[in-house]
Amino acid sequence: MSDDVAPEPGIRGLSAERTKAFVDAVVAIAMTLLILPLMESVGESAGHDHTTWEWLVDQRDQLQSFLISFVLIAMFWMLHHRLFVSVQRITPGLMWITVAWMLTIVWMPVVTALTGQVADDALQKVLYIGTLVVTSAILLVTRVYLARHPDLHRASRDDLRLGMSIDVSMIVLFLVALAVALVLPAVGYLGLFVMFLTGTVQKLTARILR
Image 1 (cartoon, rainbow, N blue to C red):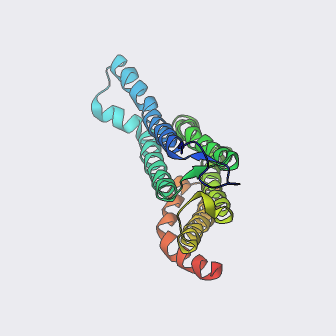
Image 2 (cartoon, rainbow, N blue to C red):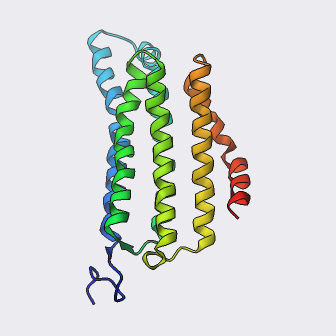
Image 3 (cartoon, one colour):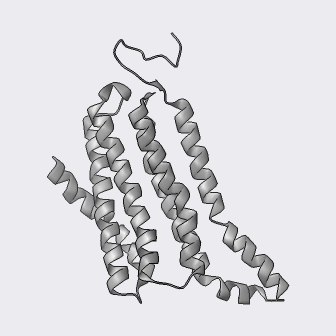
């Protein structure tokens, strides 16, 4: 039987392998694009005869944004990768959900450049942290879709429920971080450190889901 044909009558979908490879490539490119503003700034600093220390001081905001975004995209990829390890078939619905998730990932280098190069304002925080909320929300939608289509994967209900609790806790904490960033501008994106509470919030969310 061809790998592009559904294994059972009445089940539509194609092999998930090409989609997994495509997602990995998109995430890798997005993570690479994060470094471009810093690469450009090196040339500009060299043109002004700046020292390495002067470059580090001038680009401290961009460096902070780069490191935070790099870690966040890596974290999102790991969550998505762990989920899709069990996915065997892809339907049009799951494909479009995945495309929407990738859209938020490729948007991250843009909002990262904004946070490091454009004057700080409330809308900038909404765009950056709001993107993180949407990325988590789409991952949650993916798990719900898979829970309703068990023929597409090998994941157990317990695994999906655990993943949902993680997604919900991340959404809640990103919203808390956004509120902190808007109410306390001096704190800014450091409010994202509330993500260290993910484990605690996840346990509470898991109990509610059960």
